[in-house]
Image: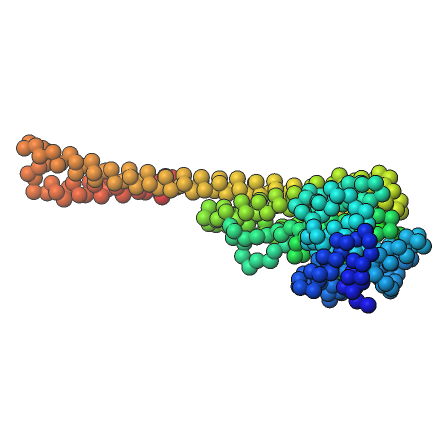
Length: 375
């Protein structure tokens, strides 16, 4: 029986009526995000649903409720259900089946949450901001550099539910990587939570490395020979995109610290050491972002200083040429007063002498300004 058929069968059982809407939508809503072939085309918002025992994927016999009841009856293994941007109607039955807290369900459906970690009874609810670098041929004042999404994770004793928002942050390759290490996956749902956190933080480091290339390019352009003509809009755009990255990275410090140091019932004690490693990687990403922010401020200040210097040089050139032009203006102004008795007014060589004096004075001023660097 296909997984879509399993979900439709669940609707016949009491207490999970909301899953009927998921099955109906599966027949008419196209599947979202087919970027990885490992995903099963379940329709609606359901990306995949798998059960594990001793770290090994088990065949899905029966419907989802049967699988959950079997796992809980034998007290072995867990279920991993993945969804992509579910609606309230699609998530209602799942929330009832796994007894999820309404506040956490609301956050998972609405998205746009800060990275956080919350405990609702026996269930752990974690929010991660995913990021990806947007490739571009040339950085402009309107280029999108960082794109963000979200992954919400519900972790219980025998289940993991991942809710993804955004077009990136695929968990298909991560699922395959985990399945290739049954010993780690056998540690339970907290192993999946660690893998997701590690995957998200690794993406942070990848994006920061790519952003550094953009910053290096801007820095090179600003300190080039015509750096004063560089577009400051690119610097502001990088700072805006860096702020978006900062909003994803910085708030995650406290949740990872709690997962690494505080005893949490839903987290295997052996996994906490792995969370400390993820926390160290996150610290590196935070330090890089802080350094980028300071560097961009320095680049912007350097650019503004270059613009100021260029303006001063332009003003000196204008002043020098104005001084040179003032000489003939003054002489011509004197001889334009139309008095009858003026020196050399009726002299035969007076005109030539005036032109020669004007030329000599202008040439002397020009040479003086050239020596002083004003021209």
